[in-house]
Image (cartoon, rainbow, N blue to C red; front, side):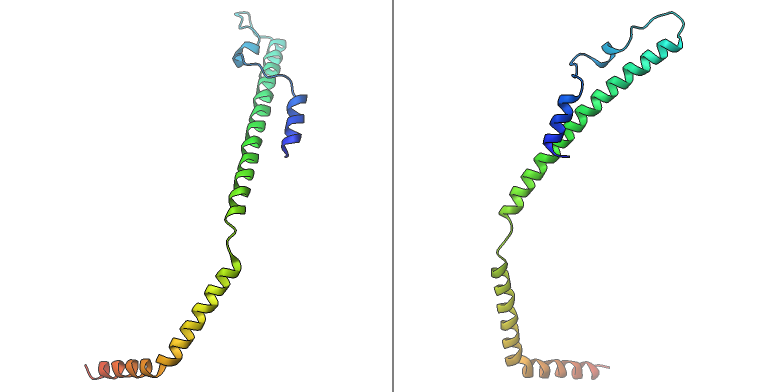
Length: 122
């Protein structure tokens, strides 16, 4: 949900009181409860719940929008230099190939000698 939709939702929602939530509920009476009183309590609690949910939804959407803005900014700054990394990988591959081509005969002989010496240890 976009911020503009949330703002419209908030503008169309009933005003949220800063008074404690219990103050909007009917006064407590010692008279026996009736269905009308129960319905009045249920209606008051439903109103309180809906107002709190609208407030919570607006706060969560605001936090999410702020997170999106911050993450977009950070990711835009940290995209990296792709051609530079490609060049580093290619140069490293080239160096390893060149060194291997030069040192391969000596490395093969070294490995063969060490394996042969291990066979004679038995």
